[in-house]
Length: 132
Image 1 (cartoon, rainbow, N blue to C red):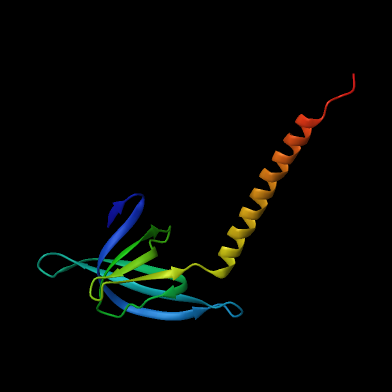
Image 2 (cartoon, one colour):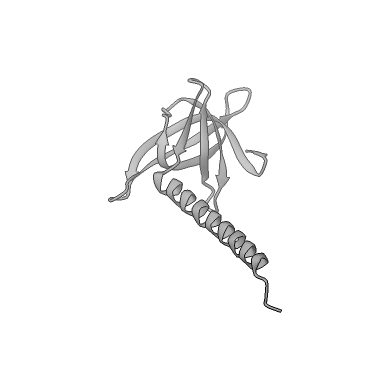
């Protein structure tokens, strides 16, 4: 497994590809498979278990040659942030959820409100002149 910019990268053949939904009210896609790594002679040298959760856009099939980028958790699973399919030249990634976009917008509005309030306070403070 290669490390680049603090992320783990593994390349090989996807095996045991499984898609399912998780959660009742707001179901998320769960993609699991293992990456089979082989040497120059075609001998299997390693298996890396991979999982991806979210609203996944893209597809992976058993036998596809893939490059997976993500972080390895304590259980040894590679939590994929993106999967590049070397056969189809397409990416599989979780989409940004609407909820995360809403939280970002709320954070920006609150942050700008604090800046505006500080600016108004500063203007009013500088305009105030005590009587002599």
